[in-house]
Amino acid sequence: MFMFAGMDAMRILRAATGWLELGLADEALVELDALPMDVRSRREVLELKLAAQMAGQSWNPASDTARLLCLKVADEPVFFLRAAFCLHETGDTLAACHWLLRGPKTLFEMAIFHYNLACYLWTLGESNRARSHLKQAIAMDESFLKAADEDRDLVGIGPLT
Image (cartoon, rainbow, N blue to C red):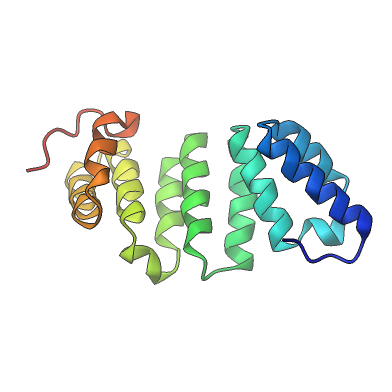
């Protein structure tokens, strides 16, 4: 799972993972803060930190961690999805939209990209673009039709036919 030299680092990472699996995100973050700085900046640690921050709904720190992961691994679309989501949860939906659009081109092939973009655009009042992206998401994955009916970000978007 993790490739680190120090046994203390491995113990800390296992403990943090355990806390997170138990639903105790704050405890996981306390464990991760005990890691040496050079270990804390590793991708695997940042991913675990992001998961804990998102689980604890610490949206501002999570958006920082997610954006750092985007910079470290610019070809990984999931980090751009998470960064945008966290920014949206902070209330900065315009930044979420811009950040999502900065991601790798592989995002455009993902239904979740179009769905999330629809949510952000709808929130920003760009109804035509939002509907277009939502239709694209549903065309790619029909499960997004049900999701859209229940999503607080898409209230009022109406029928898509």
